Length: 198
Image 1 (spheres, helix red, strand yellow):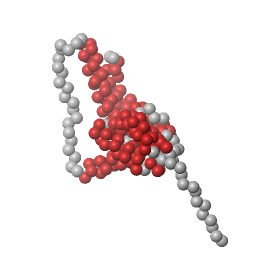
Image 2: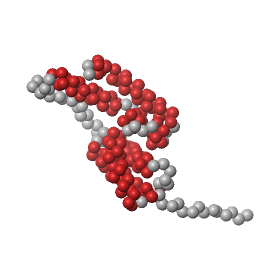
Image 3: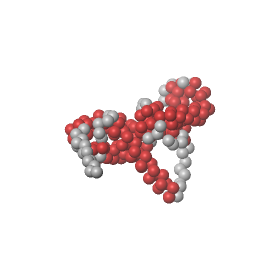
Image 4: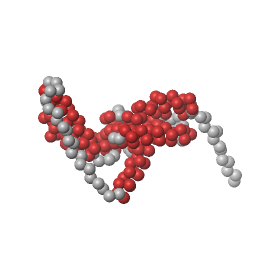
């Protein structure tokens, strides 16, 4: 019994990733994608490297973009996957190298009193203190809850978009974000009095 294999016609090229459109996409998405990667990596140099690698990878693999969803989403997924790959390599290297603990205790030289009104100075000092505490608490969150929280709260992605990026079920992402929010609230509870001063 002969079987006939039906061949599908070749896919038409998707305009968003052709040369002139890709340049426009690059110009439009370069800054938002850099901010996205900076929030993930917490390092401008790493974010810049990943940004370049993202656009290079997207260009090389543009045939994989079938036009379902936005080209910006395709770039963001590519960037996120590259971030995960880099994170895995960094973790592997760190486990093989001897661990050197650097002191993270910030030394703020308090310049004293002639720079403006004391209340402005105290307010700025309090805001700086709280920002440091929030960043530290955010750093202590377990992965992948930290990344889900950052993508949702700082990048403004919906839970569905975060789920797609993390290749996780929607409910799992919602749980991760809720858990991260609870952990942050718990870690930052001692600083409520400082926030009330603002």
